[in-house]
Image 1 (spheres, one colour):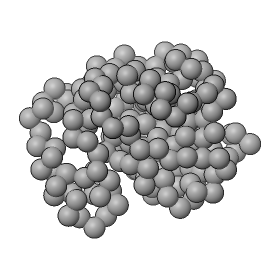
Image 2 (spheres, rainbow, N blue to C red):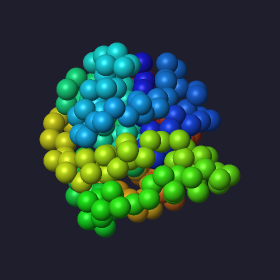
Image 3 (spheres, rainbow, N blue to C red):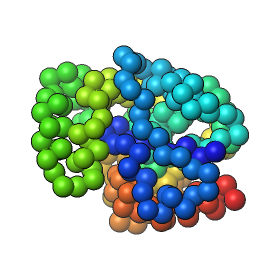
Length: 198
């Protein structure tokens, strides 16, 4: 099975179009927020709720990739694909990490309400994600110690113009791609996934 895990302020709708052509792939939404404070707790929820096995593949965008790595630490997966994601906290934009402790002051629900009035898929997705989950995960990423496990089963796909998480040297680089390459460059991402797991 291939599980497609969205970014922090996104839903399964992040994986439309070309992603539907991946055989045996399921796009996930974040579980209903149950007070999880750590990345490990969210990873454990995904494993339990979706019965994830070691022969499965996880494709994760941004936070979804970080959670995929935490799953991989607990349950070595067949393969992990990181789309515009990080393996170390230091790869995340420094300003975002520095501002994370102030997330409790951010009027996320107001922003979501305003985003919900927008016409774009990105705005609609943001409006659907639990504000408390967003707060908790911002703090969790700011405290993350990074991934220190085996990298043989990990493939990174990254947009050259990503300003949220800097493009690593070991990634399949998508020229012109930004942080949301799963949405803007889905065909190219799917091509890399197919090429690696086929």
